[in-house]
Length: 367
Ligand SMILES: C[S@@+](CC[C@H](N)C(=O)[O-])C[C@H]1O[C@@H](n2cnc3c(N)ncnc32)[C@H](O)[C@@H]1O
Image 1: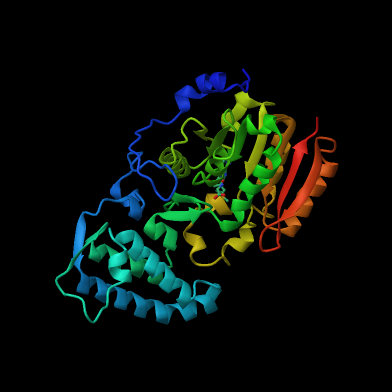
Image 2: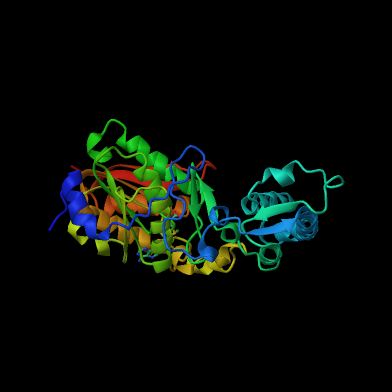
């Protein structure tokens, strides 16, 4: 059975898969987000969302900060020389962000005068001081990514939960949402239709798109990784988008069989790094799941698979945007679309990212 595109019928078909909602709302910046929407354990809840159940004296906290600053200063220079890793300046900024997330009242540290503070002043923390030492040692000694340490990443206007087992969404990927935004402008069919985000990871693209679609627009987000499915569900619920985004576990189009020919849009940032390049990646990246990075021998296999699938999955006039490794993959994909699946797509374009690197291939299913 195919999915039709009215909100009512879509919702009833997808109802069993919609996530359970526990809407206890807490506003963060101007967004309406849910505080503790899933059964995540304290360790997997982003630090800034944990209750302030610990405390430490201000002087002990300042000792921690001094210790962490010293460690960062000596490590930063070698990291950047080693593999273009984080320099001292960035590590010190991360330390400030860690403390901001850990303190119930971050201003306490920002405005205190270390030489004038009372030693006894107690500060409320979202994790204990011992854990802060452990986390910063992991940051420096193991090059554990900062985002896994605090359990979140700021992406567009969102703060997304992340943890080991799910890719940390990258700034260049933010542009996929802009590409979709451009495509749906003045095109009600796209704005109100059914989209797919394939290999959703933290749910970043799916959530970004869901927030710009029109009232009846919906996104199905798939991922093979159970951790990604759990994290994406957490993020979807925190932004109260359960009625706009459905998360399904499975391989690429596998969980979307009934939507064949009904999708108005497909977006994906699949694994595209050639296997032989994985070992040369920055130490932090090696903590991220190989399933999210390794695109096989030349890195293009999944992109080609998605391109072939888009032929039957997209509605005539439907839009696609695929992220690639750069110029070579963009050109290969464009050539493939123009020759091997000739006539299936029109207005195929290569779009550069904000750094000027050819990064995305976009286009429309021929009507
Ligand atoms: C580069 S990451 C992108 C994650 C997210 N979309 C983002 O941009 O931050 C690729 C994602 O594809 C998923 N993936 C890998 N193979 C897959 C497959 N066969 N089917 C579905 N998802 C897959 C990975 O688990 C990972 O979450």
